[in-house]
Amino acid sequence: MGDPGQVRREFGRTPSSPLVELDDLRLARAGVRVILKRDDLVHPLLPGNKWRKLKYNLARAAELGHETLLTFGGAYSNHVRAVAAAGARFGFRSVGVIRGEEHLPLNDVLAFAADSGMRLVYMDRTTYRAKDTAPVVEALRREFGRFYLLPEGGSNEEAVRGCAELPGEIDVPFDVVCCPVGTGGTLAGIAAGLAPGRRALGFSVLRGGRFLASDVARLQTAAYGEVSGNWAIDCDFHAGGYARRAPELDAFADDFARRHGMSLDRIYVAKMMWGIFTLAERGAFPGNTTVVAVVTGSMRADPPPPATSAALSGSRPARAGADGRSRPAVPLTPPRGEDASLRPP
Image (tube, rainbow, N blue to C red; front, side):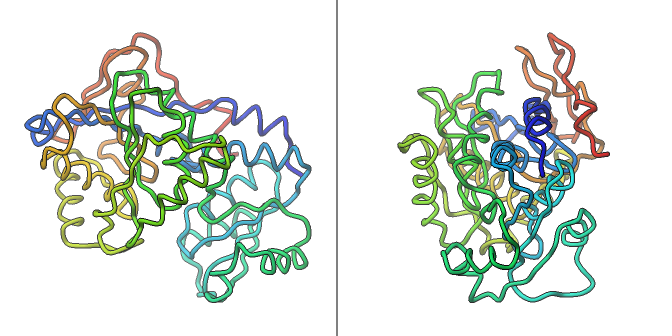
């Protein structure tokens, strides 16, 4: 069984998530500042929004005395990977219900999950579409016994509460927070955590993602009893749909890597950044707008930014120049590195 005390102790110390400002002539011409919130650096096994979504869910599971976590996902689901890692870290058994049939050898994501102790089971696509219905859930309970259910992508009211803490970590003035949207939980939480006068803008990574607005509203209502009304979702930068690519997206991401030395995750983060730059160049943001772009998934840097490059405590963020090098701000307090107790055993 998971240890409630351990969960509270480790998740109570959220590692620092650096802020890095982009130095790009296209943004300068548009009068827009873009600051990356590098949540991909929060934790080596639970990066990005995974840490935030699991924080209160794992605490709840431990407090209720659950020994098993069960969740859903596709064969390349980073959420499934994160649940497997968290289960191993905090003493839960874990079950991953994977959409479709088994393919051997396992890909890197599922191999990691299995090596972390997750039991992988496969569900045909017709049944998977009904995975949230009572008959399917009850069938799973008969097979696996009592478990704490984490929805696909991890988005529920507990995940919203975790993501709502993100805006409070941004200690520089800003106007808009942007994030990719897959299941809606991250956007729902960020928007709920914003101070008056600030807005959140999500970029759907799904084709036909207009339904996501109702999902975000439902999640906010479940978590807080109301819809905040300070957010919107742009559905024009999905590049063909989930995990799909388009020549325009690839061209943008390749150019971004050349300019800034950072390789964007093309399922989520690249679509958001493509949208932000396109809207900025179209004049969709008023002049002197500061946008914080939340990096919710993996992003490689070449070379990796030093630990001090983005430490912010009342100072301006580090600037990532068009030459691909981060230019550090001078922090007013020592940088908050990752707590040694949070590193994998």
